[in-house]
Image (cartoon, rainbow, N blue to C red; front, side, top):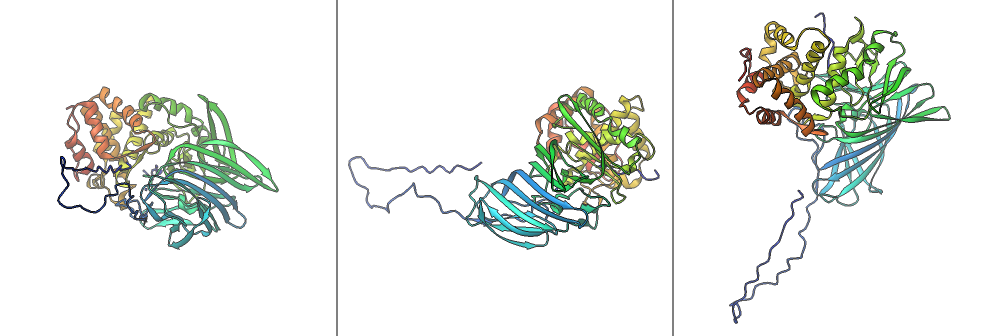
Length: 484
């Protein structure tokens, strides 16, 4: 995510071995009870945790299962601001479950089934608790179907601001970080549980509904149009989105992948359209630095709603506030959000504390793109921040920013400086090998700071813990970086 500059979430196989002790031609002194090694152990079914265990957001996500795919079918009526939905969750139990939770904010649940059988359900705040007719056995798959409706509402966070589903003049937008998905469908709302998604979004004729992944076409009936989208690569829930409204759409193909971009029609033609038209050019450059583009589609969406003043790396199709383009063409923000397709989307966070990995690498991608286009070199971009950053940037450690500073300048700018300090320390060959290795080895998965540091040491052959400690966790400006 990027905000406009202001004036300036084994199977353990138990092998039971019986040893038969028999004397040579004699009987044991006493006979013990009969041994029945084939008797199964009694299962202990328990409710799954109502949280994924993230220290920053203990209530986000849930435990006890792993989702592989969501099928989200919703109908939204902007005139009434009402949404009706059916979401099917394909998952596997990771422990023996008597019940499990999903995150769902505001909407009314009408029915739940698990493996086709009616399931009991209760609500407490934004937690939906589901009790299947039978316990779910660890390692087994299950399918939950939830039917719901109501008036969707934004999600409010006192420290981070709003997100989620918001009603607009001509439709709606569902967007936000660190959470948003639970405002329009039931979900395990934490990036540690990634899944593929199928979306079917039905809206009144004349409106467009854009979401993630590959477009699956549209079909109209009785005054309504259903738009289909499919994101097959695993995706963190906060990276899902929908924009519904009157949109100016551009389509095409690049390297066999579909391009689908859209701009709200109240945005004048010009800088916004021209900027996102550069998406594939920017992506092609980033491939030379980060490795193969990780998804099956390209695109971007520009929105004009004044309540959204940021850009977000929604998977395969970033969403940008029009504010980024008011001064003209801006491909730096495009580079930032596209860099997240590798770092943040394909390689997602394990915990929110490590957000510097997302934002530091994406900020550095801006500097690399600027240099590639003939602007100032990445080293110059580093120097301007290193010598010009405020004391607050140095007092706030990006590797442990706290919830209140999750989207602070320290996370972005000092995060980017950390990346450059690493480059100086290990040299260009090891540095660029590291970037491609990280995106390749962690592709479609999750990673954190400790794994990144370990990989950097493996690739470079150098001890780097002191460097990372100073740049990520120190509360004073580090010394200027030097080769190790």
